[in-house]
Image 1: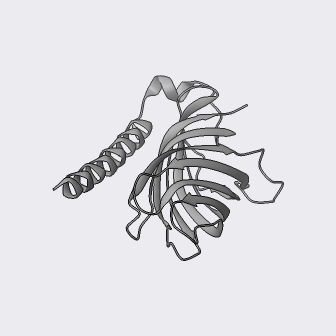
Image 2: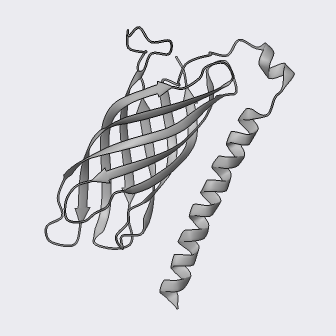
Length: 190
């Protein structure tokens, strides 16, 4: 009974986070004449992002809530209409189910803006990661992996706004902890 109830709570938490992200996207896409008039940065991703994240670890490990920070320096000097940005990520997850107790993903990749014609900048990205895993079972150790993302930056002010993202991590090793991650947080440009 307790396991069924905790699984139900975890499912409801994921559903609530998804609905929260969907509501943020809806607010960002809602047309407002006063907002369209100001001089917020266009056609760019935020330089720094701070997220609250939920990662579905798969294979009986459940899901974990954590914090994620990103640093996206200036765009690379490529001759694309919307040049990509390097993306450095560091996350911290406390895990209370399964053999893992803690996960710290360290990731690097590229983010490519899809469109920059409005206050909402959707993007795609991919990269590689080194995952520091800690747990109470033998054989748990650091692993290499990869990730892919689809997200949007919503500019609310001149240099700040909201950022939402869905990602998928593929982590090697015996634990099979790869899975989807959903993030929502603040973004800042400098």
